[in-house]
Every structure is written in structure tokens, then in C-alpha cells.
Length: 232
Length: 232
Picture 1 (cartoon, rainbow over the protein chains, first blue to last red):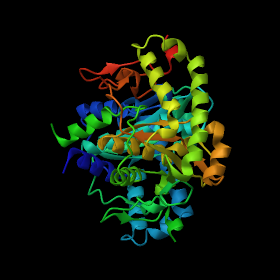
Picture 2: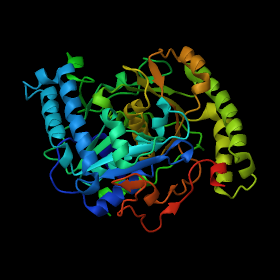
Picture 3: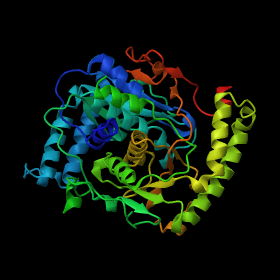
């Protein structure tokens, strides 16, 4: 096992964590995580990404409460719309387990060990391409967290409370809020990362033409894509 | 040195590579890189990211030529607009070195060992937030490449030739082209990753209020942000 094997193994097994143990993240680990996150690339190396950390206590509490209420509202709506409420009746199914993890995630949102708003300073009009300057840094943060024994998830249900959140945290209008990252020590085991078969994800020379070398390794675990209803 | 130290070190030293040695990427390494890339998260785990690989030879050649011509045009325009053409007169300055790396990058675009179009299947209207479902996978790809001894860069100058590129590669209208990733064996040394000081990038509890624990480690290298003119 070489160091590149270990690196790829960590990359390939970092999955969304939505249940957290109660303890805080060590300050030294926070420093290391955010240093690694901010080494990520951005367009023209403008480094226009920023991370706004919301601790559990202190003056960020109100922002946490705004988000918590909105996350509970959004999850209830999505759960009904996408069939997770029905899927949840089978607690052994993947959709059922996902549903119960989400229930816990939103119920205790205010007490997630760390909540982080990844932000982007806009120097030109909003665009679907601008995420290239903030989401690589988000992924670095989640990977660095994993390497240090933590876990987390990037979510985007802040949209419905953005005006209140901006006012509460003094976020100027030209700053985009790219999402909400939850971080902490995982509760329970990570479980495998499952994805679609590689030939469905990697093409060569034309759209929808599978790359001949894009084959899954032995033991790869597969899943359908998307919410419960999409899985039939 | 623990494995988490090694992991964070690799995360923190992965930088944009724009000069490549001529050799192809081993097929086995390609498989591993794209497997790791596609373990990245996406909104609701829809896995709506796709990678379309453009080899140097064969039927993707015409798409390479379209991109190559456009990249030369875009770099010439940016070079003048952002003052890289003037910065280039001092070949020892950072802007001057960047400028000469870009000259080589666009001049030999058609022969970059691997060119990849990261794409996104849109299931709802285009949005600045949608990048959360494709740029984490791009970052995983660049990190996996680095771990295996390769390097690369994510760029976004495809916009000006999108209609021709879509026609050439049969990319449907509901697919967003998120950028263009170049990959290969780096020519020369990597050089350090330089960023703004951490207190300028990480805030706590309110916008622009530096997090007290956000301090750079000894030996961190700093840089200004953005193009040559922005640096004065």
C-alpha cells in the first residue's frame, strides 16, 4: 500500500455525514482543516471564496436558529414530495436510513458541532460557472475533515432565509452564500460510498459513449441516483 | 508523520499545472482517477455530474482544435486586459512566470495529454448553486491526479465555442458544460501554493470578523489574489 493508494482510498470513501457526536471540533484541527480548504483553486486564483463559521454558542446562535427552522421546513416538504416519508416505513432500506438520518440532522440542527457558510465574493454577474471558485474549497474542507476523523455534508437549504441570514451576519449583497456545511465527529459508522456504475458517468470522445477504460474496481458498491421516488 | 498529515499535505500542495510532459496518462491511472472523482458528493446524491474525456487523437481531435483556437484567443485578450503582457517582461516575477506558463498552455492545447469536459445534467433551471453537484467531483479528479503523479487545471474558456463544441460532441441542450480540465505529467517542479493570509479568508460569527483560530502555519507562502493588474 503506497501513500497514493491511501490518498485515493480516503478520497473514495468520504461520504455525507449527517449524525454527529456532541463534542466540539478541536481548535487545532479547525485551523488545519480551513488551511487545507483554502489551498483550493479558484478562477484566475482570485481566492474569492470565504468561509463564515457559525459556532453553537455566542452571537451566531440566532443565525443557527433561522437555519434550523428553515431546514426542518424544507426537509418536511422534500420528504413528502420525494417519497422519503413512505420510504421511511422500511427502516432497513437505503431510503429509509437516509430518511431517518435527515430527521435527526434537521431536528438537532442548532447543536451541530460546527456550521459553516461557504461564500463567494462576486466580481462579475452571477453565473452557473462561478461555483468553480467556491465548491472545490468546500470539497477540500470535507476531505480535510474526514482525514482528521470528522465528517460532514454540504447542503443548500439556506435560500429561503437568505435575507434574514444576511442581516443577522452582516453579509453584504455582493457576496453569494454558496451553501451550508455541517461538520463534526460522526456518530456510528460511515458505511460505503455507492455510485452509479462508472461507464454511466465517464464518456470518451462523444456524449454517452462510455470510455473503454472506465470500469469499476472489484467490490465497488452501486446505487441509483437521486431521491427515493427517482429510484422507483 | 501520520497518514492524516500526509493527506493534508497533499491537499494543501495541489496547485494548477499548465505545462505537461508529452506522455499519455496510463489507462490504469485514468480508471483510478475517475473512480475517485465520481465518489464526490452531489445535491440529493443525484450524481448528475458526467466527465467527457477528449483524447489527443481520434474523433475528439476536432473538438480539441475548436477549444485550442478559442483558448489562444481568450488568453491573448486576457493577457492585454489584465496586464499579463506587461508583467511578462519580468520573467522572474510571479505574474511573468504565470504569463509564460499560459503562453505554453494555449500554444500546445491540442497536444495536452488529456482534456476533460466536466458536465452537469440539469434537472432544474440553471443556478449559481448547481456547481455544488459538479465542482467537488472536478476537485476530486485534480487531487487524485496529483496523488498519482499527474497534475492539471480547471479552466472555463469553452463558453465562446459552446455551440460548435456541443454539435461536435453530441452534447444535448440540457447538459451544462462546467469547464475544461487539462491533465498530464507536470513539466518541471510544482512550486508552492500561495494564498491570502488565513484571517482574510475565514470568518467567525459575522462577515469580515476573522476567526481567532484561523492562523497560518509557520512557513506558509502568501500571495495577492487575482490577475496581474489586481496586484498593482
